Length: 202
Length: 320
Image 1 (cartoon, rainbow over the protein chains, first blue to last red):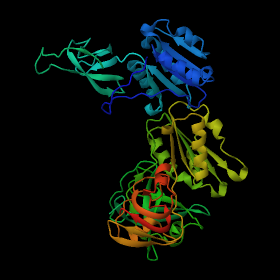
Image 2 (cartoon, rainbow over the protein chains, first blue to last red):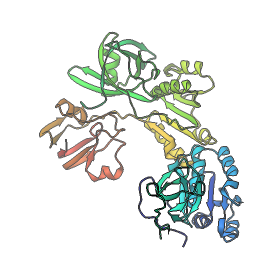
Image 3 (cartoon, one colour):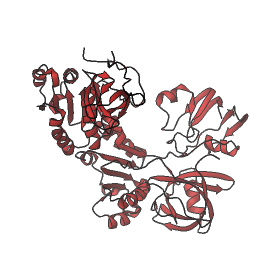
């Protein structure tokens, strides 16, 4: 089961829905890992959609698990790449060439959806008009509020900043501009007094 | 007092533009500067018409940065309740009047990569101010303006001479219509569309953009509803402890104001939501005219917008 019900949180925390086909001549999907399942589900629900779609897919640690299934969906343009960074120029170029009416669908991990949403917003799509569906890992993309460094795929709270080494508390406070949650030093007043690290949502 | 802050003004010019439309210009009576505004804002003009106080909203069409003069352009509506006729027949240069501070319910979304404007008839007025604002900011815009014919093409000459490449004119009498589907197709990502004109035109643009997958957030429209006359009715006001009569030719909001009840309002045209009033009890039928309340709220019988909506029946009790 790749779906996870996030508990209710502060307003800043993004919430995710279930992808649905919307009217439009062009459809752009950005997905990673188990996000492929959301595309496969949508393709079953709307058989005509994939022929009008461009899918950018990053398998991450799922390897080839979903690739052949995606290849069988009749997707107009399917790109499978090693990382979001590798796919980003393709995404940005697709958005730059796109016209009004383009539908954007993001599915997979929060870090992937947040970064793709940031590019879509920069291209002029209101963030509320971008569909998202969370699948797979609940790992977070975190920004250290002290050194500003980004640590990807954070699974524990607290965690150690991969840039400055501070012990960071995982907040629900989220930035669409940075596409990251905020990590705040947990032992600033009493250095070394760090609670044991636990897996997120465990 | 409800509504935006008031400004005492003197009519400084009355300029007939064509058979139907006249521009009215105002200066502040105290000689001070007007506030600047944002393109698309309206002002509520107070008219003392033979014992009746009319408060009608008009789009400001002067330059938003011009603090010396506010200007509105009014289309004469011979079938209406008389506000535009009062402006055309009674208002002369030198008259003292009262207008409200600007209120904007139709502002530009400045995140847009491009502003696509669709005007029908007198719906051109908010765009006159928005275009001046966008020109100052070197904005990317394009106007498609449909009107009956050249003789009634308010500001067509001014617009086409100053912006020959950005302004597109369509005359109904020449069977020249906006090819909306083609116009929408191929607009760059980040385009926002703005429409001001008759209800049919607004519905057409909203329908077509939805069909083509435009986000709702990128579609902006302004339609002032004039309150429609109707059968007189009686209203009980629970807070003010009054029973008032709403006449055939006045709105519920106007009746409240006539009785000295300070009821909130901004647009007076069923759009802004400011006058939303709770219904405590009723026996009869609501005539909801606004486009503020959702359909289920309208059906629930718990809310009414007094600026445009009416009631038919035995009793209506409002929380006011």
